[in-house]
Image (cartoon, rainbow, N blue to C red; front, top):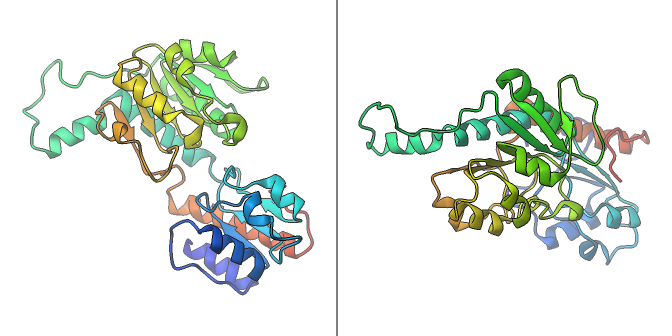
Length: 308
């Protein structure tokens, strides 16, 4: 955990910190529910009904998720066993939107490919047709999921690059820039860059499937900064191999940390190791929010960021 996060936790609780950054095994999670009063977990730590079914009411009554996405936690199962779950919204918004822009620019302008060429000693100097990419200024961005992060991406695209904004969302949003709500299929068919920013969960699994990818223009780029399983990764590999879309920029993966081998071979794909919030100041803010959620619960207060 970041230093300030640990300091804040130790000021209020007796704390035990795992000595591994690998996800907890089901056995570790089950033991934690029996031994601790509260837990701070991360996106790799799966909590499901199978783990909780042995408990009536476990000793652990509070799970504070270090992150905004909580599709790795079965919140219904937790509620059924008297366990409160919280997350850390807000803190991640701008940092994640910045990574979306990083992926957009790197993929559109072939930056990764160019760096690999340069580092390999293969660059022979500038010429007029070398590594020609997609100029983003004035293009159209399509946002799938117009929540906090989706709006932050759209705002950067509109004000920073003069891009038109269209979006697919369950409800229409009031924003301070021109944006048009429409269907997912139309967004996919119209956008030069399709950005996935919708929450993860069963209802959005494989939302971006073969049909959506087929609707995209052949020059278009897919960017995913949400959850890996929102995109059908096998269908994405097939679309890229067939030249059905122009490229992809991914910060998350369906079987994270595993990455489809096909993606690793492609020069028109930018791959980042889930860097969305990878800034010390942002991670500290997330951690302090996660500690505050624990503190509120054990002080008998309303948990500000309660999700179940």
